[in-house]
Length: 195
Image 1: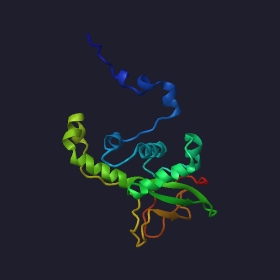
Image 2: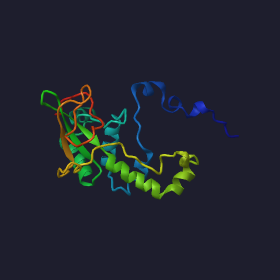
Image 3: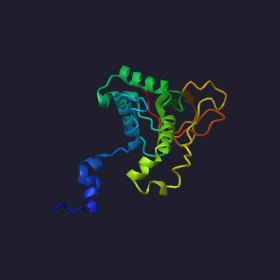
Image 4: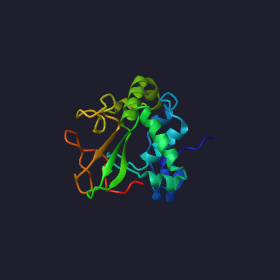
């Protein structure tokens, strides 16, 4: 006889434990894994994307320092740079250098909005699958009207749009201000030195 499951059986604590939850959890879009092959992402690309997304606590862009990723993961800086460059070459990542008020370098802001836009396109293409997987899927009114996350788009101000911008000055407390003509950069948090 099958056991009847209670809502508590589906809680994070029941699945992984309270201590792990209290140490922190990361939210990662399931569709990233579902479409990994179609997106042409190697396992190391998906690992780096999910590692960086673990630092995205708000709608702002995440900005983990590469040196911290190296220290915590044991992967070399050269290897992290290689994965980052490959993701940029695929058109899935833009990075923005963040500069402290004193002119020193801070960590990069990692902008995966091009990747998310492509995943949105694939989900929209495969609505039948997603609706079968989750019957409430289409009840989300924002599904078919992706608004993006407000991330700046290279080239909007006439710049060449090479995928890396420099933000200087200060916006809100501890946040760099974007170059003239650009919207505020999501993810510009408290300054930290990058490598």
